Length: 120
Image 1 (tube, rainbow, N blue to C red):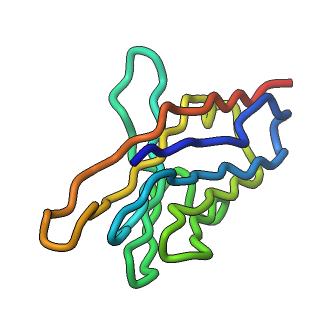
Image 2 (spheres, one colour):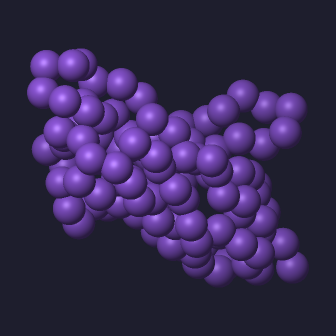
């Protein structure tokens, strides 16, 4: 199973971007998705999560501006980012908790990351 993010880029402050995460390969179930970001020299930060049942949670810094969603049980989903600020600049990573075969256990899978730069 591989995760691939897309949708990053350069945007002006106040602008929007929509990140997508797709999963390739066959697997039994996807139990939740998270979006993380990392700035060089800083710890990786959890941005948003969505559980298998659809419950969401967000970092305080993005509440009201970012929305995490999924449209399919086998699709890790999306991160809609509105009113972007320069401090949102980071590499964004998709994380998915996947059970490849029934009974094999749930493991974390990560994408390669996509750069988001907010600058005028």
